[in-house]
Length: 172
Image (cartoon, rainbow, N blue to C red):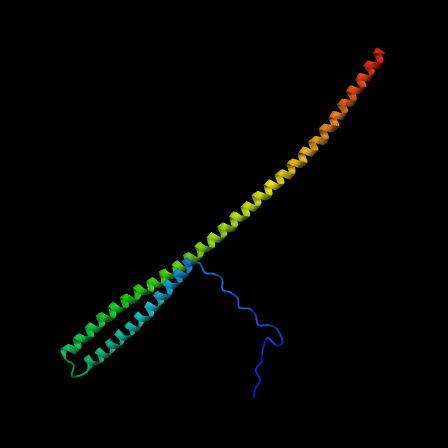
């Protein structure tokens, strides 16, 4: 009997399954449309292949020595059906191209919205930092003005005191 390994018993634990990033609804709708369009192209391609096969069969029957007018007409009918099926296929392929373009547009819109949101957040943070810096600068300026004003006031006060002392001494 062979022993089976248990990863949890020894060695590293198995890695946690990573969640796939959330796909916005706009992108998932566009992707679904692409899938549907591609499925329609595959079905139509099968119809074109069948019509091509009928054309080759009709040609071989019409080329036979005992070909009737009906078999010769069937070649023309098969060709017209093939042309119609090919036209439908061309239209469906164009629809696939447009659906893929809409997926890219949706992805770009989501990306632009994300960038705009990040930009708003960055601008808001920058504005907050400017406000905080302005407040800090204002406090510094007020403190500087206060110290300068106090020094000037002290000088003026000492001058006044000296003048008053001289006047009082002169009177006495």
